[in-house]
Image (cartoon, rainbow, N blue to C red):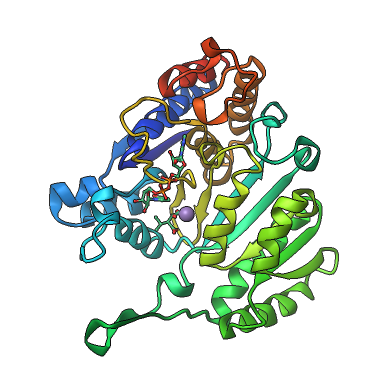
Length: 356
Ligand code: NAD
Ligand code: IPM
Ligand code: MN
């Protein structure tokens, strides 16, 4: 199979982990006889430095013209600490999602058994947890009108959803539930928010077409608690943009670390595959970032955009084998991990590649 893959590393550890994700794709191409043609594009702080824009047109065009995108992360402390900055790295990411129509962000929370001890949650609570989040990605408070009023003394961000936006992601989530344990939990704040009442109304309608899927509705605050209390009770979780952002960082602790969580952003055109973590400037340049989120994002890319299930599974199995062999990056090491088994970004990447 011949495909064009665009590598968009972005900022901070995005650069470090995406390099490993690409090497893994290279190894897959070699092993399975595919031809992956790569190009690179700028986004985020590095794009602002080079062009003044967080997502230059050239990058967007390259994204639209590629068969899939492997994205890293954006962000820089310079902007995090300067609320007045007008051009910001995160705008590049949001524009990419909007322009590519990436309305569904799939975030699988899968605990590798070997990492049972790496989480701060008790192993008996965690064992067997396997959740698939469907986070809506192009609507909500992220994309509504925002601004200042009262001479800058008040600020507002408006949350909006249309029935159309809710229905299209709800259908995707129900379809996915059918291929899994046939349970779907829709998460909202319908006791307070009008957008959430619309959300619930639409999901109730869509649910009628999927009588074989058991549906429950939870409020987001209760869900935050239930995720830690009893993660096994969830199968597919369907939720809005902001709630999904927050709940999946929380859920990363079920998988042991932010460094383990991959995601697929899909919609109308080119799919983008991205770790859920950010640019992590606290560890940038140290060579210790966990690249598994990027590697597992590459696995999602092969499966979802190219239909290469066997190749995708080969990557997941290689990650599993590295963990079984006892190798860890610092974020997933526990008290019992011997020092010599704690590897840096590139070294653990090599261990994964060796097992492919
Ligand atoms: P973060 O995800 O970058 O980091 C949170 C914590 O998790 C940090 O302690 C970090 O060291 C750790 N961590 C994250 N990924 C890791 C990995 N692969 N291996 C080991 N440890 C890892 O979130 P933050 O600190 O809140 O944000 C930093 C910057 O990243 C901000 O500018 C933010 O806007 C941006 N951000 C970008 C994205 C994205 O591009 N998708 C996502 C989240 C945050
Ligand atoms: C993520 C990030 C982004 C989001 C930010 C950086 C815009 O946190 O991908 O989860 O909120 O969607
Ligand atoms: Mn996030």
